[in-house]
Length: 67
Image (cartoon, rainbow, N blue to C red):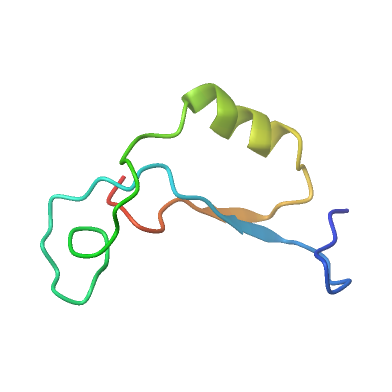
């Protein structure tokens, strides 16, 4: 069982598969203030994260982009 730094069990992951987005929401930093390079998560890395964490119940597969 994976445990976070506060001693709680980890049951889900929030994974950003991409930070590319075709929307132009004025309140979102992706297309306004975020300056880091945009990219996509390698599918093999995503598979490895899932395979190495069998205790995860679900994955929220977006964060700062629109996968």
